[in-house]
Length: 76
Image (cartoon, rainbow, N blue to C red; front, side, top):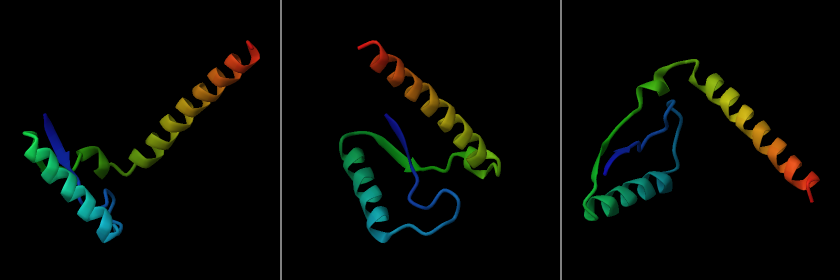
C-alpha cells in the first residue's frame, strides 16, 4: 500500500510535537510492515476554497445522518 505522510499542519499552523512524533512513529511502523510511505501534501489543501467546500459537504452529510437516525427512531 502507498501511504502519504503529512507531518506538518495542512494550512500552516503549529502542530504539537507529540503529534508529529506519533505520525512519524506510525510511518515507521507501516514501513516495517512493508508499506511504501512517503511525504505528501495533497494539492487540494492549497485551494483557498477547500475549507468552505469541505465544511459544506460535511454539514450536508451530517444532516443526512441526523435525518436517517430520526427516521429509524420514529419507526420504533
